[in-house]
Image 1 (cartoon, rainbow, N blue to C red):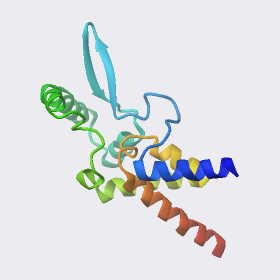
Image 2 (image 1 turned 120 degrees about the vertical axis):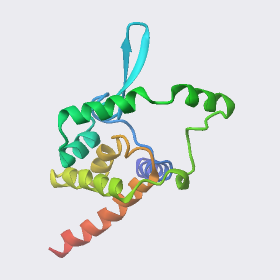
Image 3 (image 1 turned 90 degrees about the vertical axis):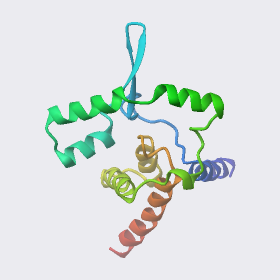
Image 4 (image 1 turned 60 degrees about the vertical axis):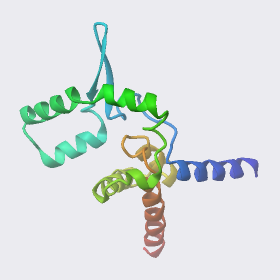
Length: 162
C-alpha cells in the first residue's frame, strides 16, 4: 500500500511540477551543452538532442545553413543581461508560471510523437512518459505531461476496443 501511495504521489508531483527524473545518458537530452575552451566556458546547441535532431531532419536544411544559424544563436545569447536580470530579481528565469511560457502546439505534437514511438516499442505508459519528458524542452512545462496523460487514456480505449 505504501509503495502504491508513494507512486501516485510522485506522479501527481511530476504532473504538477512538470519534472521528471533524468533518464538515459547525460548530455544527449539537454538542448545546450556546456563546453570549456581554455579558461572560457561557452554553450553550444546540442545537435544530438533528440528533439533538435528531429526538427532538423524534418526541415532538412543544408549543413552549412544549420551551422550558420547555430553559430548566430550561440554567439548572441545575452549572458550579461541574463546575469543582470537574475541579480536584480532572484530566480527570475526559473519556476515561471505555466501561463508565462506555454509551449506551441507543434512542440506538444512533437512530444506526443516521441511518446508514441516509445509505446510502439512496448514501453509502459509511465516509462514512455519518463523517457519522453527527460528530453529538453519537454521537461520544461506541465502541458507536455497533460497531453501525454490524455493521450494514454485514448490509446487504452482504442486497444481495448480492438
